[in-house]
Image 1 (tube, rainbow, N blue to C red):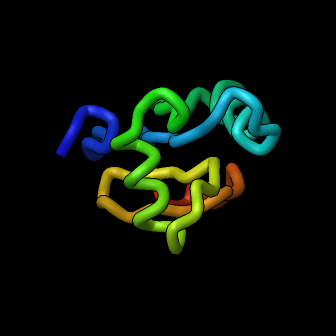
Image 2 (image 1 turned 90 degrees about the vertical axis):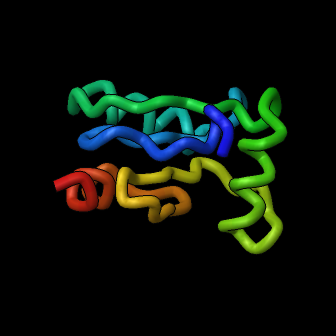
Length: 87
């Protein structure tokens, strides 16, 4: 497992994104407002991140894809879903 696809620590998430994704920017803003820590992986710069995103999204590079400390992933989750899954 690479640094880009390593599991996040408890209470944090890993978010796979692209710089041009409006949904990614929106989720990052919400996470920042709520004080939820995240590690961001730009899938345009990290092929292993892109490969992971495709593996959990039926071959598509759909972002934001979020990984939780328990190893589960969600595509374009709401802030409420992130909070719930981190609780």
